[in-house]
Length: 130
Image (cartoon, rainbow, N blue to C red; front, top):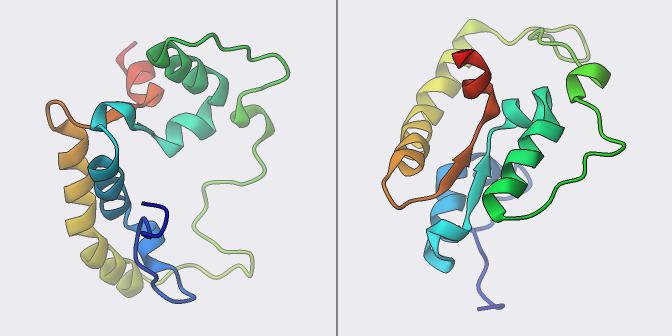
């Protein structure tokens, strides 16, 4: 219903926004899971046009990539773990974050592997096969 929030408010930090399994569970309850497509961030950022082309194909749509380039051609960031101030995340902090997110990550992976569940699109796995 329009009055029902898709996910709870978690204050200004927005922690819930990073718990994808909880968000997707709400979408799967609201919509037929076959209508929900999850696109890997790595897939989209490494080759957006190819990822969107695959998504369009799955949806039975035509995709025109005119004017698009692979984000790897125009990337503005690097893979270092330093933030804009040059600081690196401490190992203790990383471990705490992993410990917190692990159950949600496992829940997400389970949702994506479930038969008759959500659709998952990731071209990075395909490119690693060749």
